[in-house]
Image (cartoon, rainbow, N blue to C red):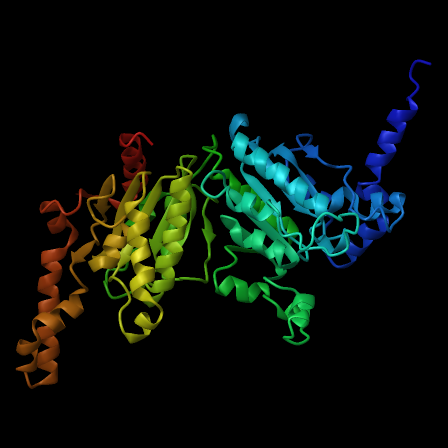
Length: 508
């Protein structure tokens, strides 16, 4: 009869329903009891409503030979991984730029472990992302490989997998964002670590082996919460952005993805006149560079990465008049702005990723140079600092350099893609000052005999200050510009206009 649902369609609807939260009440309650969301709740919050096209929803764990099939359909829904395509941020970016692939590991299915069909689904979505140039957002919570898929009888170790290679092979082709909450061990951690950008909640533990593997390797019994807690992984640079919870992490994932999706139409910015007085008149005083960044950027658009790792360089994203830019900036409140080994490596990797995806770079430079000394060399400074030159020399996107104050030595050159001639435009604020090395060090080195010849400490200090003042006059921004070492000295209040004009001139 008309209007009646045929049995096969009714059966399909019932089968699909068994994969959803509505028929997995016990699993959902457990997630909520721990303060977590379900995999499908995270999915719904991430993607634009009605846009998700799912792949492999009917998969179950390869355990039909030892478990009831009906029970498998609920308990191992989608074999523990939701995959598909969707749009994200289509309300703010151009619709054609909003396409994305999504992977959500479901911890409510066998602790988020990776099984036979699970891997097949992951491989499929990685192939689609590569073929159609889809950025990928992946939720990585899970315990790694699964030993209980007894239906699989044609393998021994199960190591002839494509998943890890396929995910890693997306490097430089599409943007990959990993989001974690809860336990993320072994294979799941490998996926997390391979991503271009990593977001994790405070309630995260991330490690290349979980408790069972550690104990099985004869390394003792450890609690899961001793392995890679978020605070540790934030300090050592494994986590790019720390989120409060899954809702916050999902919001951050959407925002982070948006910088690679193109410009937005609506923006506001702060009064730029405040930039004229943001640098202290006394050149020895530090200032909060993030105030500079937040004033220059469109309101609410600054997103920082790895804030507590490599702290003397700030890395992140901003928008100017709606267009996305990558940003590096020296923080003079950390090591006086000196570029140390950690900061160099951090900035180099950041520039390589942004260059791969065509994001122009703004460098806000204020550094006395590279960090020096025995302790610095113990941190592999030679190799790690040099990586910043390699990354800069490989850049094909335009870089605009704005010297806020100090531009000294190799460290300043590294901040500008390896040479002051490399930026499409290099300009200084009137507070800018330049030299082959920091002024104080240059005076102590170059005028050692003159200073040693003055016996009275007060007179020696006065001579030292006089010599520093003379070198400052020789190296101040207007003099550097007059010798064409930089392109211009600008009014700080006009920095936004200068940056955007320089990018337009470069065709960016």
